[in-house]
Length: 115
Image (cartoon, rainbow, N blue to C red; front, side):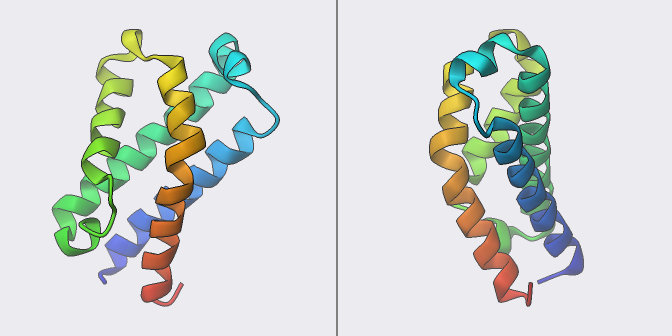
């Protein structure tokens, strides 16, 4: 795996960690009502999507091991370009249900290259 690929995966892992840290102890209601919380979490989702998009262009073989890579990039695009139509329930659901899988996949890829 290329060094840049590893860096992008590490960016994803770090962003996931921050999302989980920001969300700890909060509910979807907190997320929808607190602009600072929402902004912090959505910024990290944007970083995840951008890093995976770059990974796909740089190292398609590694990116192909991320099961939801296309949906992740699409979600990033919605957050950036469709910011006014983001459904907070959908974003919270992604946080609760999809991030753990992504974290496991990214950590496995990093272990393969000697984390």
